[in-house]
Length: 416
Image 1 (cartoon, rainbow, N blue to C red):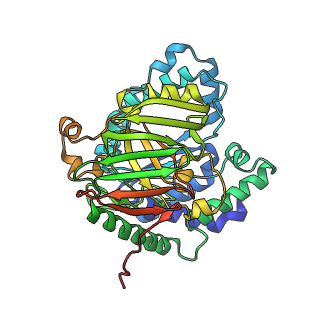
Image 2: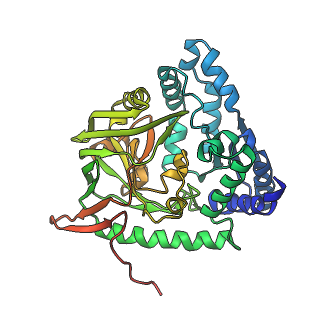
Image 3: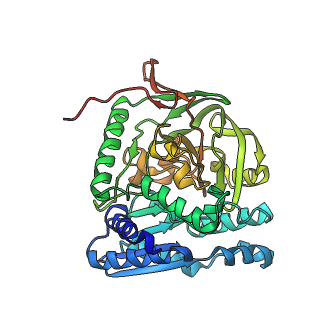
């Protein structure tokens, strides 16, 4: 790790000051794999220097996860430690910031019965529902970033030795999250400003529908009335700016849960809880998936869709130009945090209430009446490519180009 000492320091600064934007007297909760220890220590030091009161770290170890899925009794996957769920809710109430370091092995659970995984996922989702709702409503600052692990690096750079593969992955991550620049914090400020200009343009348009056309994809997505586009930096309910995802190249909003019709085909593999789903199509009618297929991971996809009614409906539509820095790396990361920022994507499951006017203040019943999807899951999958065209349909029925050949089809007026 000595080789990356300077970059790790800058990455920690970025995570603390731009990612979660730690405030004086605040608690920071970090969830991280054991391999992230060198970075986590720098994050903790930076957080305390910035004024944090506590830094709590929860380590996870995929070797232990693998052991449990292979050797624990069936009933273990129907139980969740409620002391942990209550602890997360307490941290939310205390105004903590939440930082997750996400670097899963894409093939960790490929030889595990998908039903076991689905049961464990549903159990955890039910137990953590209150915490998750608070995070998705931006009640607290939260952020997601990644570090290389040997298993993940092997998946991305399979022809290299572990050490070389990890170095290559570090190089890619630092370039994509702008750590390789002289002043990453200033670079992120500029990047957020650029995304904000696109957000303003789309919010002013208030398109009624988006129409997608590409090989294997022909789908129309109705947007909820009063939808709100977001992208780049977000603002917590107590007014603190933060960046939920690092990297981020997307702008996103809310589809109407009953207003999706047509067929869509994925363009990048989906790493879902230690399994790969790929070569899949989803056919929607009146918002719901009524047919699906997959060349790889069919059973995993089936269990995902069967989680609950909302898992068969869309909760997010996101636009990402094909010329994004992640896409230009020409790598498949098998990590949704990166792959979703290389391509336009949809998300099955729960919608972000912040994507509709005053959504965070609306009751579940009112959100449902407005067409907002609810689910125990929120799973992004990539559909963008250099062949994707998207039109926006105005309220008076006029079609306007948004994407052509995978990139923005409009020009924004300079703010200078």
